[in-house]
Length: 227
Image 1 (cartoon, one colour):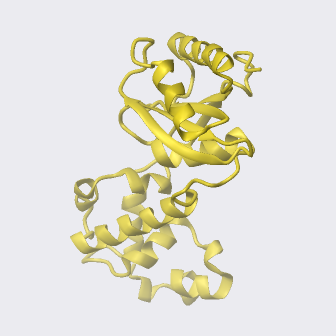
Image 2 (tube, rainbow, N blue to C red):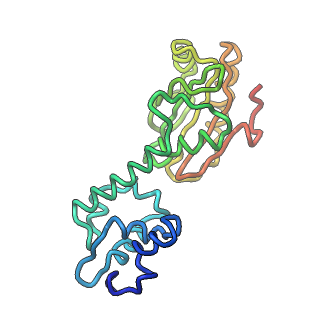
């Protein structure tokens, strides 16, 4: 059924005007931007087909233009518009470019890190450098690839921490599968970094594992002693 043939109370635009955009489903929101359908498919039908490709609407940002163009009813222009919407949402969820926001909890920084690396197809090991007020002063990708003791070099991490004047650090990496269970290598690396941090006087506050909006905190789960 075409949207114009639906009862007014069920049309996304009229529903949003009457109840507010918060009342719209993910499908209805996407249909608002898709605007028009094609023969045999309404904008709502196309929106449903888009959502069928993903686990949730957030995944829209991580799908390629080529994948979206395979969906009947999506032109190159519409795909570009949808990607722009997803990019706006991503940018609204992250701090400003100088990263001067205060870290208060693993969940807070985990949400940001999921936006940064949680949907990457390769493992990214990153370090978040904090000042005495727990403000993020720098965010650095140390390496990309499978984590091992031979790749993570505490010397390089703490040299950089000293250069930027960090008082403490948080380390994090992503699991592309979305399973944020830690490995023996993850635990060994974390233990080594904690020990070096104590020697350097730059404590490691936590090691976070993120993946597809999932989060694991070594500190919160008492895997190791950080103090």
